Length: 327
Length: 260
Image (tube, rainbow over all chains, first blue to last red):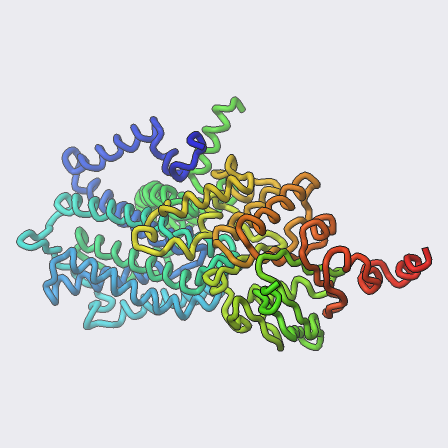
């Protein structure tokens, strides 16, 4: 019995094997030391990528774990940005508390929308959440007293007690820390009873029901959690950004995050993280050629759907395995 | 037998209509505690419909289902696991992308939330050990980390049963567990089900076409044809019943049997 591979989930063991561990440590060192040897711009990009990682974690919960489509991720992100910025400025809450507030507001809206929208499924669910996302963008653009409408909102510096965060380099350690916390949280959710019930719902709703799982509740909770994590990402955004405009909280952002999760690999946390980083970099490069941006996104998404439907990392893993077995 | 007076699972006047079609009409059936009870009949007799009513996936048009003294006729399906009623699925409803281990672990869902520590644990105490035992008993230990969808059909059927057993049921409902299995696998299933009855005191209701299994393990057999009960009794009684032979083989077969 002792030799059976039951001691830990297979994924955890694989992630901690020799070369992977070295890679992980190297990545951690680079991540921690980044502000020391690079320019402000690189740190800004790093901050942005870390926010995308958290956005992808949120979307992973609802799409990857529970298998429910959501096309409203940018809306929850936006709610988090505005709610935490306002809580920090108007009520003068310490920024970490303001971030939690942003996550809570986004999560509460997510639960409410989830309870309504999750009566539908597949394309109908996608359309319902899409409509909500569009409606929220309209709210962001027109609720002048809260969002300053189409002029965009200046976000005042995040305040941690006596410290005001004024630069990307100053913000970076906090952004990195919160990102790691959210990765840990997502892994913990995924491994828990709740995460198992999400995957059961994804794989077979009737079987989940027969195992005593409340399928409707699982779907709504996963939607709410996903929204809360997106809202938290919004709070992280406010740590280093000084300005938010409703234009950046629309369907394009939803599609961008969706693409990241699909490109990285649906259903795996590592895939969501990797997709956010790889595709986030690609989209930053494409910013030099904005007229081609959408076309190239579309092409990448189609190519992945055709040739690597399980995502970039599963694709690379398969190629490595094939190479090892001499094919 | 005292159990006979108050059956563990009692079905009274069960009627299920789909539009104008009566799939099952006024079925009475009593399943004794600790017995293996088989529900058989030709294709379209209403066995699976009855099965899905008892497991609460369909709601009957009329009639009453009681389990352990409790009326479950209108309870939601998801509450069955908590009451100790487990089921398998005829066409397999595995969590295909998940490992065999995780499939069975999810079977223990209702037991994995007793404390916060259990609920957030990837390997809740007590439950993991039970899951490992079940894998051992169903011959799946070496496939624990295999994705369920990558198993062959026989092993997938075993995962269904192991997952149902993780509920720690008092009543196990099996929908054609032997369909599609090879002889060797049917023999193993036969052994497992008998052991579950003898050692674990489980009550088992199975819908089954494989007569080799039904005749060998059933304490009692209920025969359905066109939605009504045409016979009930032990294997020997049912086998000798002319109505059963007619339902399965046609009228001539009965006459031949009578003459020959």
